[in-house]
Length: 314
Image (tube, rainbow, N blue to C red; front, side, top):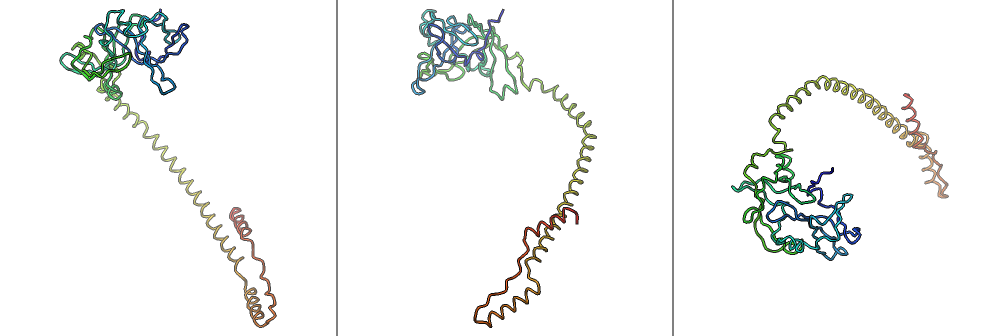
């Protein structure tokens, strides 16, 4: 037999369907409404999507006895109360006195604070609260953990202490009247152990962790030494090979430059011929053509010759 218990975290964001055939999309569960005096959920508020992404539509209230849970979706029954006020009138309640537990400060009568109401576990058929977890924010939860407070330690909602609240007002809409409110719990809550926090396990765990770390370091020292030696040897070999290649390349380009300079620079015979040609052209007014200089050696051909020499170890 499946458990009848469910949590507010599980239902928050659940898609809600309705209509005559139960296939019309209504919205998603947004808030949970609790009885003003009893420890039970009376229903939940469904946030409807805005019309054309511009026009806000009023939220829908679904009573605890007016839905079915089918394949992970909430299906509103056709005979369910159409609004929170209609349900409260049938049950003899005042809608404005109903409470939204989740997010309320958790306090004892002597003023001790235990965070806020987080995840609430309740009977999905009757709404009766089984327990709830305190929430102190992600960082505090990780460090200090959470308390699970059973329903028999909950004294109920108390006005005049805690945090500033807003009255429910119209269906699912916040009113303008501001007042203080908190969930009042038994002083015995202070004796409940926190669960899931780091701090509660810090004492013994720290000593064990230090011992494990030290043992691991000691065992790893020879391995690290061998690895460092092997790495150093490999680096030296790599550096030698790289340096050798760089040296070879260096000579290659030096030789290339020398070869190229030779190809570009004119020979002694070319210099004499150029001088004679210059003298002849200046003495002859007819403008005889200069003797053409020999064709320069191709720069890239010279580079290739020297590269081949370097590669072959010449």
